[in-house]
Picture: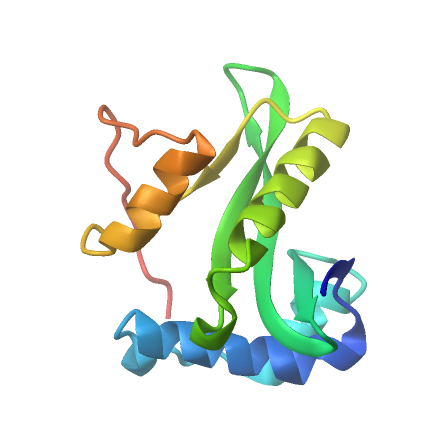
Length: 150
């Protein structure tokens, strides 16, 4: 049985573990340099920079979605950015990923957001197809830029 819920402080070790599993899946473990204490502070500290939604399947952590709010100057409305969505392989095929996305879409609508956005690795065909089935489309005219601050 699936249960979606807002993450709690006690979930931080599991969320950190799930992030590691996601990094392994994406072949990016070498890029995972964050610390669990920082994750806890950013999710539950005085200044909250992100939020997490947990997916439990029969009482076990099956996946999570980590997100934050941004702002669209063109829309003059907030947006919801999905940083990470991950469902453990043994729990896939039960609709958990779709339930997480639907819950985030509702959260965005409830907050008056104008859009829900995320990025996906270009080689991850199964995720790309999953997002297309959800009704999302790639943005063809925009290129994502990043400058790492160390």
